[in-house]
Length: 222
Ligand SMILES: *[C@@H]1O[C@H](CO)[C@@H](O)[C@H](O)[C@H]1NC(C)=O
Image (cartoon, rainbow, N blue to C red; front, side, top):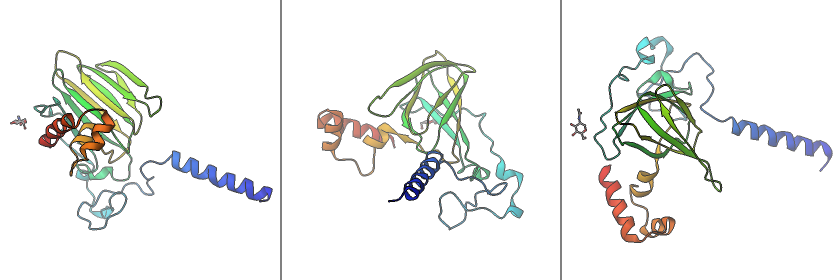
């Protein structure tokens, strides 16, 4: 291999590296691309509605003033404002969510595969944290009060807990029109069809009876 070829290959590798580390929702090549929810075309994102038919309603969502119903085993409720309910978000790389917490509630450990989250507490007191990837598995945790903000890096396991005596409300800004949520417990113990007992028993170093118990709780909840 000559010197030029080595430099050229190095340059290509660097280009790919930069391209992939900056990977996020696609950049807009137009002012907007309001999601055409009725389109039969499947692609990465949603096809655009004819701009001539777009109205202010396409960029609008009403309802974040309404508290979510927290009567569930976690005591928390997420109200997402993503492209599914606000078509104007398509291709814009951003969305948000309201999260309500009853006293003692948790938003259980979860991952957003496609977005970093920036959480602001509007009411109450939350204990939040995220864990870095292996092998460090380092926990970063903090108590947040009204007006505080905390960032959860994309793809990392994180959680929220209401440690105050009142209800709590938080607003999350998310760096994707469709951040996605993988709730760890539901994914592992409530999958459809279920993961083999043996896998989960080995993975968590527990016996199969306990695996069955977890599975019955998580599948009943869905
Ligand atoms: C909240 O959810 C619970 C459980 O699904 C339901 O029984 C209750 O009627 C809901 N409350 C309101 C106000 O919607």
